[in-house]
Image 1 (spheres, rainbow, N blue to C red):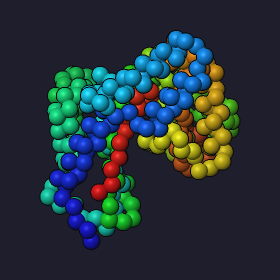
Image 2: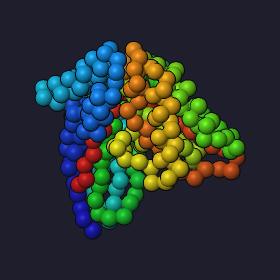
Image 3: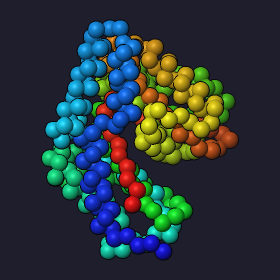
Image 4: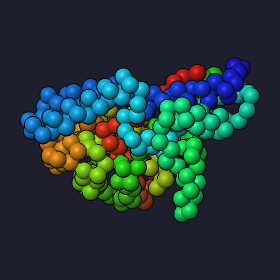
Length: 280
């Protein structure tokens, strides 16, 4: 059995939080450049150019892509043949987040009580999801998500006889209501199936996937494409000022569900969808 000290996990989380906040993902940069070529509106083109320039400067100067450096979600795939030593996993992950936000001069946005609203001044605790998988490795993915887009996310419990059109209508309605407030062009993570809470989990996890990837199932690949086309037909455009590019990508994650329901969740994410991963 392979052994790893949790200090290595702490260091990896710190590295990933900094990378995610400073470096816009390659798939998103590629999509922005493709959108720039397709846009015909001069205003939309100028806005996309500004987003690209912002991302280039953030990476070069090692400063945050966005001033809202987010609430961090950490996704861990933990090998069943891996032994952790030297401490506790949750503590190591949270300390890694704290280290990053101190080292990178990143805004600390977490409050310790949702009603009393006192800032923890560490940007912790973070949300940690752990899946036990085969092997002796650990895969760590971080997703620091701002609340301008998080506040526009939604879950709907559709009925079991609902059609794909009902799903498309719900997602496009979420995008319309988000309008300019969540800094389009969006990345839309969609969770379909499971339960109320699991659909939301799937939708957030979908944001970790490259927008160049597609669902492994043909009917879900088609649904991703249809949703993207419908959302882009709204004309909301970059920063809500009109254009062809309201969304850059749509990723669907699905799970079996109950005979009596069809949960659908939409995680709205801004153009600066931030994530990074590492395998130890």
